Amino acid sequence: MTNALPMRVAIAGEALIDFISEADGRFNPCLGGAVYNLARALSRQGLGTLYLNPFSSDKLGQALMQQMVNDGVVLSQPVPVQAVTSLAVVNLNEDGHPNYAFYRDGVADRQVTASQMATDCSSHAHSIEFVCTGALALDARDQHVYLPWLVQQKQAGQCVVVDANLRPSVMPDLPAYQRCVHAFLDVADIIKVSDEDLLALNVPGETPLAQARHVMQTTQAKLIALTMGANGAWLLTRHGEYFAHETARLNIIDTVGAGDSFLAGLLAALASLNTAGHSLNHVLAKLTPEQAQMALGHAIASASLCVQERGCIPPTWIQAQQWAEQHRSVQATVAA
Image (cartoon, rainbow, N blue to C red):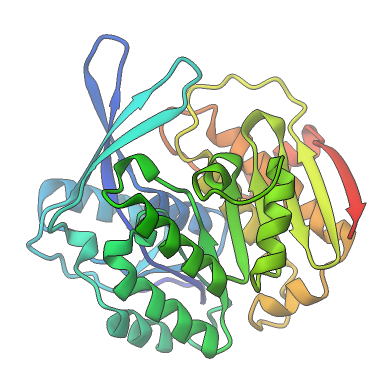
């Protein structure tokens, strides 16, 4: 499958069906998975996006594949596999916050190898600016697939993005899972992490910001995005710290996909600064306070638009840009 846009990002991880609980007890099936949502969101923000995992030949897998293609994502494995589609049961609390249960044994998106992903990325090495993974790909049971791929990409000079997006309640061996996530964070150039993720990882620090600073000090990360829901978000770089939160009153439907839309908005904004077509690491090395605040504001706008929709409907670049201009987020800068 072809796309007029050059491939600027390669992304790997889960694609699944979310069965979201309704007030009447029924479950509404929605296309989902954090990495799947992120791939769609990146493409809708105008970045040529290559998705590296296969889809199932079953009806659910074909629905996932079709939506991905509709959103402009290019599939490195367009031929469906016989394995079934991953499923998630999502219960929303009174604040619209999701809790998950996953069914992922022998599923389609796990039918992938590190060598295959590396080969697919090498076909677009001239244009790819960063590679992404996170969420269920950080499961210790799949470490042998995703971690070697990321290490290889980093050695090749790519900017590595890891979205922690933890699911500790569904992991059978929590200590192994925590160790595995830390191993991924050690490879990353850009990390997105929530306040809840930092607690689940037992990161030292009295506050989420202090915990994020600890991660910055103990990894090679060039940028950390810390999200705190309604309490705003921080960007931490080697040169400064930047805060923003939404000021507009939002009609929140649910928060499914909000973090994915935030990260897509952030990465798209950073990529917009990358006029030379190099690895995104070149942008991070020269990021100014004004550019960091712009990127954070665009990320906040992207998440704000997402939470006002049912399920994950990521905004386009123009939609997020217009929201950011019309609803200026409160921002602050702290020198490092």
